[in-house]
Image 1 (cartoon, rainbow, N blue to C red):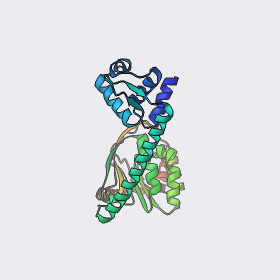
Image 2 (tube, rainbow, N blue to C red):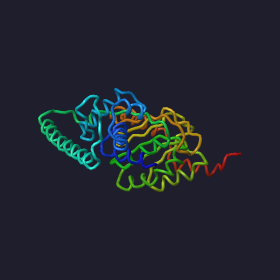
Image 3 (cartoon, rainbow, N blue to C red):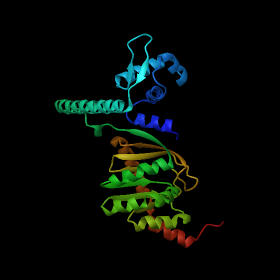
Image 4 (cartoon, rainbow, N blue to C red):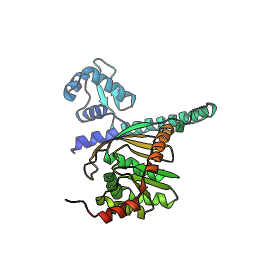
Length: 277
């Protein structure tokens, strides 16, 4: 970054726009100018320069002449910076006053609590799903249920297994349904070791879902996982709507009744041995 660009960046840090910073620097460097040469040098329109100069005058950083045509001069740097600082201090004081006024008004109003408003979001990548899942799992207090493709368990073991173990350690009930294959035995054993209750749904290829504390939930629209990667595209509906959560929870309980314990499935697979290549 050259000196001029760095100077402009520092001015922006004092609350100037990029155009204001460039205009002030030009006047500071080349002396007082009328709008026409300013517009030409800054490669913009006269009207744009007029708006920028008016804003700089209000900020106390540019001073216009009284004669015609009007010539605009930059105020010396120390004075200009002091003026910018004072303006920010004044704005902060005004914001504090407004904040207090809003608190007083809110106490006299009957606002609808924000936790009554449901939010809906479409998650589009595995990386985004993991980034949402970790803090949500950390906040779970009572119950976590999930129906998941076996490939997702591999991703979860890499990125969220520690958080799941902590969650179970503080007393959260964790139940998981999946279609367990021979290649997934070790992943399921890991899940069982941290305290997850896992059951097997034979050749299940239906809905992917998760529900936390009977409120927060996500529902897989497209979970065609090809391999373990954060770059995998997905389409997952994420929401904190309790009515939708209850619908998914009812689906989970229906599937849970149709499943068998993971330990039983693992025993069957180990007796059968690996599938032929």
